[in-house]
Length: 241
Image (cartoon, rainbow, N blue to C red; front, side, top):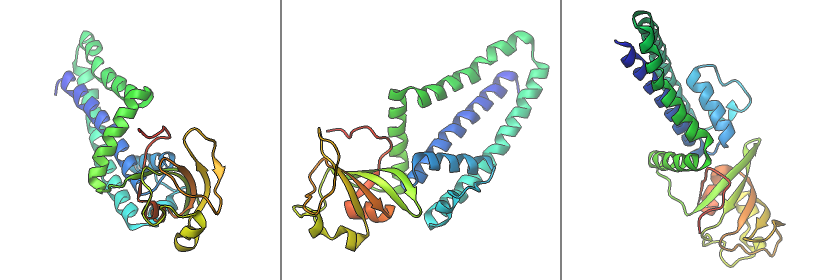
């Protein structure tokens, strides 16, 4: 393999590695993990470093996450072998190439790193990329809901999240919070309610949910999604009107 082919293969491998790490991160987020925790676990799984933090317990507690973790580890194992082999090709190609050729082929990996930088650092491009990855991952998971949830953090097995109500679930429509029995039926604690243009206020017994409300809740992720017909969103920007 000549030096151009070796560098092109190495650059393509790096680009694909980054792409699939982002895809696996979003897939884990679809199972209820916050972005930072999902990203850390995916990097650990892909690199084979071992995910031995306390956060790893979140992954092994559900069958879907265990299956996804196995797939991530197998994918990482194959890609790690590929990267090592391409690096060997690059080293041998460097030994047999002329000095002036080396400078020109460095433009190939440089272009790849620029692409990755733009998608990770430029907010507008990153937003577009996240939307594209979300649509791709959504086809894998096959989940379609009208409302959205932004996970803030986990406390034990339960999470704190912000649910944006684009539509009011039928069983909550027109009812006061006390009448919904959401805490008794779903074991969900509604803590705050924020309405467009207003400050967030503590949820009261006579609070009635309205469209575009942003409600802060505490409870089991899957139960919250089921109760509010919600799926996770990927940033804290306002939803489109």
